[in-house]
Length: 246
Image (cartoon, rainbow, N blue to C red):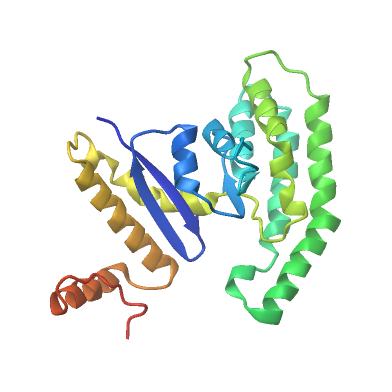
């Protein structure tokens, strides 16, 4: 039997969940009734999961990842040198973003000021670059099925979700945060090939979640989990995790 890892991450926590499918229904199960903005790649299941239904509008909205767009053009550049222009524009977009403050690292008035600054810079400097990227894309001619055509279609089909960052300062340019958190699972994937135990795979996902969350919070994963184990031994039947390490 085949199982899939679904990952949700924020700057403070990571959660891996093992489920039997990659369908839109499964994506809806993962998102639940979350109300907010979700950064994803272009996988169609996310769009299926967030469509309005007879029960009403979707509880969350999608924004899309510029890093995945960039990868498409990097691949296409091998056969379409014209992609160098759009890759240069994307590089400038990322350079602007690199100079902006991280609101997640701040609180109160400092956070509010950082958000206002991010929004102002994006509107002044990033918006013209985004407009130039779209203008370049619409001017291209590519054969159906070619790498360039696929890259162009991928980007333009997701355009409304790619440009939300210009009006919402909380939205990042990409979902590389999740990509980084998947790295440990990918490196350890061969250890799970042939697993006949769903429970064993779920336990592995749980430990990956705890270890990666500990790292994001500046804790040593080994010490964090050891404290949890000692607490469980001292208080049988409990698995309360420590909030910090002294």
